Image (cartoon, rainbow over all chains, first blue to last red; front, side, top):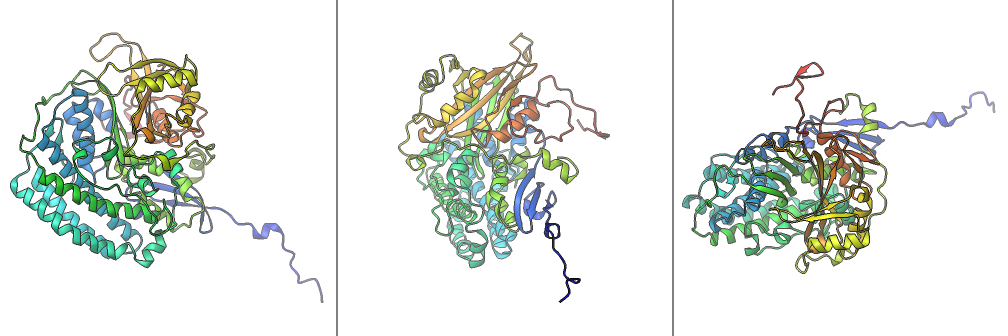
Length: 381
Length: 205
């Protein structure tokens, strides 16, 4: 046997190279203009570098140059899927500085619209999440029901997405009796529909395989990263600002705090975060039904001037669909706020991408991004 | 936010592991039995645990959130203490925010020129948010980075640097985050002047 044809292999022949993949900014699964630079070794991710700022619209700088009432439309445009909650947080902080008294009816209306908005936002999160993972039907079901909520919002305040409805002192317009009936009907209609979506998706074998045990973030890391809302609860802690620091009369309503219990997969994975949102919608319906039943009739607007001039400094956060959205407001007694800083929950969810993605398969990034439910308008502000 | 892939890898996000964090006994946190903390008690604990010079004053006369004014020299010791102390258990960091003050206020009255850095620490076990504040020199605002204590501080501090121009010493990745890396100035400074153009593009006002 001759040795002439034998090839001697050196280490160089087997050298592999890391590949850098660009995901976004125009990618349907990034839910907005987010760019991820992914360094991968074959299919396995080694590092992820989120690149944000594409949608930066200077909310904080604009707020310095506007009166308090004029800040509200800008707040709407941060998280455009949960705009009622964005306004509510800002108004509550300003009202706390003013020590204003809000009529009980206005508080009830705020709770109703905030919870309806939470359902609409979770429906969108759920529908697009299924779509990202290849399930088309839940998307149509979710958007059909979300449409009903948006129709009601149109009737309440004239807008479908950016409401400018919650104002310092109360809400802009009262609920008409017709809308209250619509809300009652919706609560009756929605529970079976949600059960249907739940049955369709939650236990679906393919869905469970794509989401369970994927993108696990343990509770201690979730807290260290500053997670809040459904993402924090998905990691297995019963923590909800509506219970911990009740605002707008949430202490009057009975509801359960839903958190990840690992019916499938592990606590803190994508499936648990998804299921927290599903369960939360049932609780929101419970809150709306109670709020409608307890609606007082002492007016929708308190005695607060249109051009308010508060003094002081406050940090206040509220439970928004995507987590705790906080406003740090410095008020110097003039018509305009001296400084408004918005703490965004999605911003902090993205900051953990690198750690969560490491060691994950490339296709699971989409599952992870959908499960932390980011809105880029709120990340970049 | 650079154009080519390879260069931005160096500047975006650090993969350095954060040292072990003192988040423990999480199963003892209960939203129903938690008792809120009083800010004076936190200040007293800081004085005895970190040093009497660490707390400059406790401000609670104004409307809104009371806060502790602390000595920037003790930043690292203070936040480590707040996180690891078994009574306070400030295991989460809700926000880091920076506010710029010129030598004159909006009404034209003289005031102390400064940059105020505001930290809000979350104590889940006590359902309490503790606001802490440091006053920095406006011309060269500088403070130690707490990204090694709270992971969330990493991006919050980058945002404060980007918007107000505070330098965080020891930050693993001290770069701009929302604005492009070649942007000039820090927009949330009160004396910021808007540029007329950026890289040959007209900036709409």
